Length: 541
Image (cartoon, rainbow, N blue to C red; front, side, top):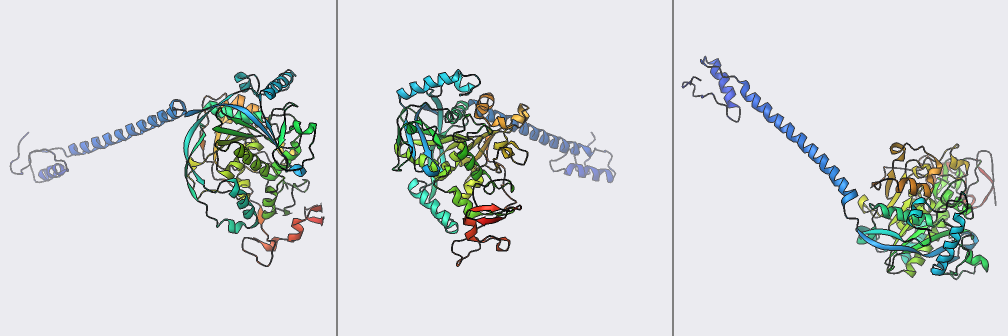
């Protein structure tokens, strides 16, 4: 290379690209040496290439690290402490209708276990009678002697100090009468450490599902039932110890060895058409009534051919909101029975952490009771209960982060009830007289996509708790990931109006659209005896 002393440039590039520009200047000035200006451009291109390569390596590393972290979370992370071995310790039966004040409790002892096991063995020999899921039979001989294994973990949750029975029931009564004023009541929300079920542990999830299935199993005609209320029941003599045959809501209570953790499992719907786990229909009438009340848009008013379960329907796609709320809070409905059962369990196990679980209707009730008192609940194939949560004015902490929610809804995509698609004139639910019109869940949804993973078809039979346990929960290697559900709104095409008993003091929230209302407050609260072809009430009791 020939050195050009006149220009003062030695032919090298500096870091800022000045060398390339000086080379061009030197050439234009007639210098004898032509140094290529592309040399610095090559360095710039090489630097950009290294930057892109580094970015690709970072993305690949992040993806691999995320996969490894997810695998460790599901398979390798500590499963929490074992909460102990849980056995059936009590059976609760709560009356409804005229017997809504009856609350019977059966304390399970060894004598009862032996009698129940003997009767179970006899029933199990009957051909075609499926009493207990295959997963349960592999783990134990019968549901009454089985000891369930659950794992727990400590979780920081947001809970109100007022979420105790002494405050909540008067609060709900007040919210029913004056919802506008109830919204102004400020609860003392705060962080609290709570032991909750470890829903990432497969055995814990299966055990809770088996407890939900246990609530369906027929009880033997033995045992000493005690009435824990002062209600003067008409159930006497041999009828008291049957428990199962009396119409109402039943729950099974499981506890570990030191009674530090208690699980309340609420029974779901019994029906020949909507299969749960039991095949008997002794509670199906009230089960159906409460299903239609909780999960329909307006008293199961699907068309003029339907018999409604309450008199809140006004006209086409118009319903009285205050009437619906009153129906849900009636003392002879299942929600009140669930509250009474929780209070009784709390009274008998005051130092225990209480968890709730249930399948189908029992799962929805477990979620509502858990929301009322701020305790954990794990449900299976529960219909959408968010609408009922709102109608009952259940407390929700402001700005609750989704990771702090303690209600988990397990289900799969081939169950039309859980997915909220069991509606329409041709659906199995509608044909059977069930208005399952809700699809929105509160809390977190833990969904197994069996339609895409296993090629299942959507079928009402997939709602059965036995199918859920044996072919989904036990068959999958890992537990479904729980996440907040997508934005959802039920009954968006309905118009809900609210009337005050005192018309002198109307408020904007009491009458939403008075020009569309054709029924007086007195008529809406009366019993409708006859309707015309278009669904309008023409005669009142």
